[in-house]
Length: 196
Image 1 (tube, rainbow, N blue to C red):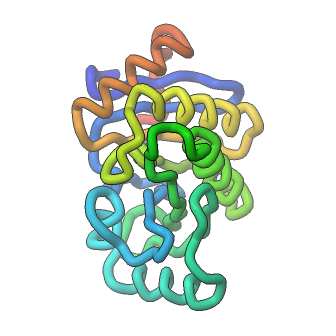
Image 2: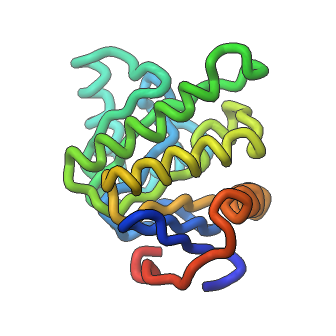
């Protein structure tokens, strides 16, 4: 366990909060904080598209042609293509509008939809970014407890075995790690080191 990584046993599963690059994750799936058009963009979304290669955009565009833009709170899955992860689960988080547009429930739905889709595709190990906390402006101190509670629920329901939150910036990692300590106490020993 390092200062950039903490780990918790939740139910039969494990939650890991780590600072790092989600595109390097070697588990079954990574979650992309996507836009409704699934066209890639800045931040995590752009990094995942660059690392996966152009076939990811082609697969995303096939989904949009078939079903239309992805509504906030929902998720779809594609192959990982050039990534170490087998799958990319694309979810659209809410744009922060001051908290009066059902943003907390939509954010919770984005995490739970992703976890359920992972389970349906036998993706037992997956990693999330901080959905909606970049360009969509969701405040870290409000997003962290929603994300952590949803992931804890998913682990208790055995939707996954290992779930990581892989956070690019030190500020985001510190906010999520502090919230994890407040919710779950002192970190446990680490048995998920091979994944990230």
